[in-house]
Length: 337
Image (cartoon, rainbow, N blue to C red):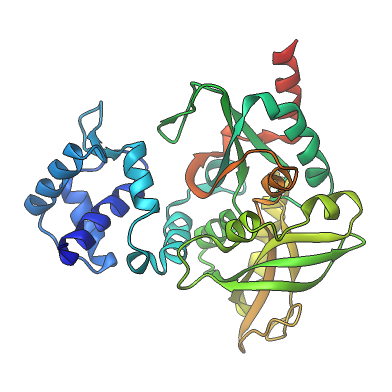
């Protein structure tokens, strides 16, 4: 095995995954130094030819560059774990920077999570996630439903399945960044809820150095009780702990208010400058805040034992793709009639 070549090959795949559309060798070459890889465009073209041959990439129908195939995405998911250390933090920063949402007009792109679910289970799924939205345990009140044979992020949803999308809480980072407010995602965790109020973190995982979204890891491990939190108001939900400079706190509150009016509420708690929040310390000059996990509705689906293929931090999508839960459910019921 040629380790150097494997690292370069994985980096080319990862770079392609970070572009919204097709990309050529020159654009890929500009992205690679941030991954610790230096390649000339002509060398990248050789790698792309090899990746095409292996079925991991393909020439876009618009002939403006390559895109990943489904097999290529799977290869990237299972690539060398050492090469992926810090991948989640890097993806958070990349998507937050590239997000283009105007919190005043409610238009632009947002960061999404998606789950592939059996179409036959949609009625039960809506019944499971309805109380999660009703208790404000989701990232706002927005949801989208993509049917079989329709496309999402360039992928066609297979027959017999549907894609259910929620807003990712990293959308908050992007909204803050667009206002010049740097937000640091420190921990993904599980919060115990009692009588509908957050009590304490019961699990924490640092975003720096992880290869998979911590919230997705907790859900897959069966460590959540979102259904309990939504039904009996006592349970365990996913949430993220973030920090901002204290000098930007007033401006951040205004951004949070605009997001709330756009249907993207999700701020669970805001701390005091320099003070711990739910026993999580922050540095002098910093303020902590907690955002509910955008995956919470999907966690309820997993808890119900319904087959659900999660994909957190899926990518950027137009906000117009998402409707309120009630609107999405109504359209689903109308389609059944």
